[in-house]
Length: 293
Image: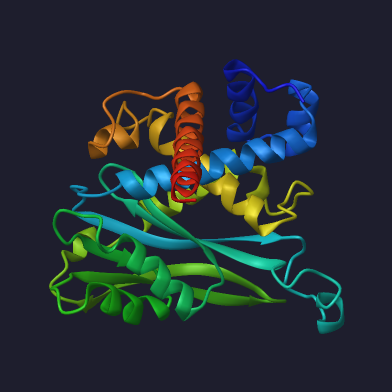
């Protein structure tokens, strides 16, 4: 099999980041489906590791947390137990937990899993150590956040408030939004900054840019791992490659973790550099075993 060039890699990843499905990317680029899926896995793992290593010592003062719904394989809602037995146990409703800096718009961290307390704990532990100072936290009314934030930050003083939204039933299963109230949970949060507006706007961008998150689509993820790879790639592209209209620079530049607007080719470089490190480590390990023998 002939390896793709850096330009071809960049073209494929650009199509995926701009909201094209794998099938449409195949038609646009002329690249085989299995090659695209393999590239998606390589790029997704590299992007996840890069952001995990570099999103530290962040100057964020206000962060907002939220979770956005999608599905893998089939929608979990309305599916009978008999139908579920015919699918992979990982199929069904999937939630993407996001931590967004209100000032820099950086997606600090994300977690993919169910809407459970265990996933809330794992999500909060992932971002708790990433800031120079403890930021003020805002969430929606999900009850799992209170314990998760308490466990993640321990005895440290954390200012946390939540936004509780109110709805009114209008019959036939429909509800309308009637208002929201802010509630202090921990510490002494600035109640005027308790909001989830920025993370919810980030959710809208995700739904517009990623076909897998469209509410009615046949381009949904069929495999959970591919869903995770696409999210990592998409968040890397959003943080480092896309200039924010309000900031006039990328979120990564605003947060101080980058000094320029990245190109897709630089994401390819991150992927290839990771693979070079792995090959070098494997060679050294094999050479050491040979010397020992």
